[in-house]
Length: 104
Image (cartoon, rainbow, N blue to C red; front, side):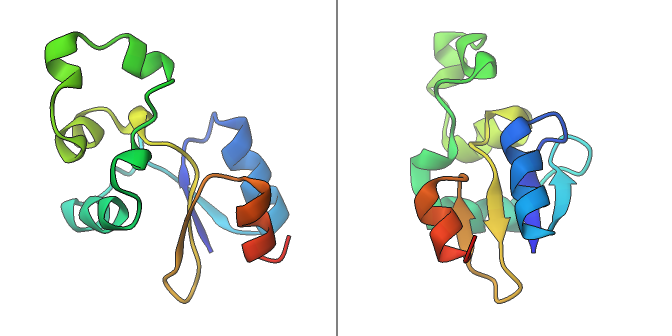
């Protein structure tokens, strides 16, 4: 299982600990264009965390950009974690529903 997130994110660390997955820090190892497109296909604009400190620091013109461009330029804007199972299923966040879907 791959946990896409940030090594400094408490929620990502909790998901790694509970699942035994591997954390992929998207700042250190940015998503490829194909991965980003796959995540956006699965989650749409929900993938952009509009409550983050990074979002609040952006000007209005930048915020108006499309999600793919924003996430490529600012990886910390990604709502996290994005959990990828060995079967290729994607889950967003570490909510009770995601934990139940993963059997945790």
